[in-house]
Amino acid sequence: MLEIKNITKTFSSPPGEVWTLKDISLTVEKGEFVSIIGPSGCGKSTLFNIISGLERPDRGKVLLSGQDITGQKGHTAYMLQKDLLLPWRTVLDNCILGLEVQGVARDVGRKRAEALLPEFGLEGFARSFPVVLSGGMRQRVAFLRTMLQGKEILLLDEPFGSLDAFTKGEMHGWLLKIWEKYHPTVLFITHDVDEALLLSDRVYVLSTRPATVKLDVEVKLERPRFRDLITEDKFVKLKKLLLEALAQNKPHS
Amino acid sequence: MKKYLSPFLAFLFLLILWEIFVEFLHIEKFILPAPSHVARALAAAWPLLLDHSLYTAVEALLGFMFAVIMGTCLALAMGLLPWVKRTIYPLIVVSQTIPIMAVAPLLIIWFGYDILPKVLVVALVCFFPITVSTVEGLDNIDQDMVKLLVTMGATPGQILRLVKFPGALPSFFAGLKISATYSIMGAVIGEWLGGSKGLGIYMTRSMHSFLTERVFASIVVITAMSLILVGIIELIARLTMPWLYQKKSWQQDEKL
Image (cartoon, rainbow over all chains, first blue to last red; front, side, top):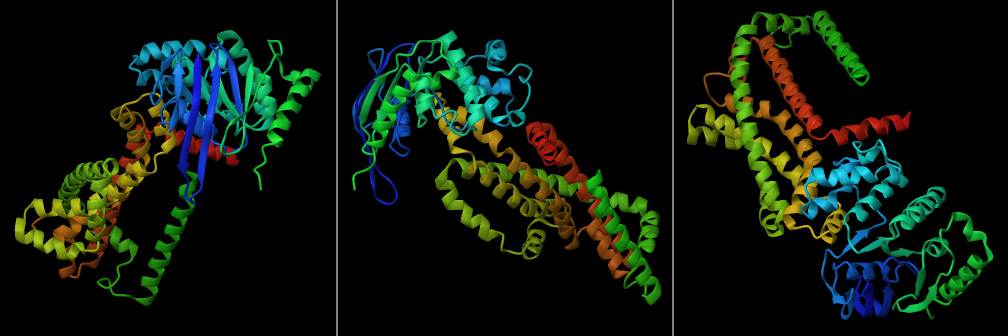
């Protein structure tokens, strides 16, 4: 279980403004899929940097299974919107990057990754370089790289943000299938309401800066879920709720 | 192969133009020899030329290797330690404003007429492109890739090995190619100032005897040697970075 307790962070950006995370608390249960949704520039990525240990909060704590991991790296697997595949490594070797950093022997890592390639729609591409892959395939390699690290928490920062709507839809269906099978604990950043509701067990809505938790919604839609869920009444009801919360977010003038 | 066709035809056209020009205006052979004269001189002096060329090639290769080692070490020190870059980089750039023709005679004074001053001239000419390109390559590494490795808990050594070295390779090879074209020229300049053997010596002697067609023949040989060296570098680059060239062919496909 991941607990974020009263995280506050202040920092100055070039024009002299001060952007903040203010007293953010949230919880992700083991095996839960949780999304954070909020206007762009509200500090969602800063929150991820804090959870992954890249940055330290001014105040507050990050707890993993009750243990304080604030400022420590290596407890989470981080996936960004940019796939960040290394162009000089084959698909297979990109997948095992995290394992290699952990000191796992290459052959051992390769065997583990190779077994998963078909499920990730990458069969036959093990020895290709990333440059021949489509956008969706690249993100799937990046996701496999993230999963293979074997961390308790996956931090996904708008992983499908740069994909076209059609590919994004396909990726949702695929991710739901993978999640159904492995039940990884996921914390997911997005500004796409449909995406958040379709994938998550719980959605946190953040306000504009200083970012606070504005709303915390449990998504009680039965699983397994499929893409056509987004047109059903119960889905639309929840969507309205989220959209209203986001609309109230307009900065005060 | 197709892309080489039009420059080859243009070159052929220029040669024919040159031949006709010299023939019709009756230009003296010692002022401007026709391409056919140059070709004949090249054939006649071949064994001698080959002997001199080999000597020059040895100088150029030694100097080039020296430059690669020196340039790479400098670039790594600057790319990885910001204070080293702040201190040395401006000096290196300014040093390039010193004409090599002014430095070469000094090298002769210090190190005599043997091979060493020639090798040093080549090294001085060649290290700069390698250093600058490699530093640039290290600077332009995608910082998000480094960030990703940091979140994985990678050590600075792992980041160097897994991201920075391979990421800087294309720039490193670009620098190598430029340096390779300079290397033969550097050796010839070194030889002009004194020595007993080499293409530079052969050129000077031919010039003094007004055997201008032999000067041109030397130029042909210098060009050929430079091209061969660049070709070898290109080959090594392709073998070292197959991913980069795969990309190029794919991009071409995309355009079609």
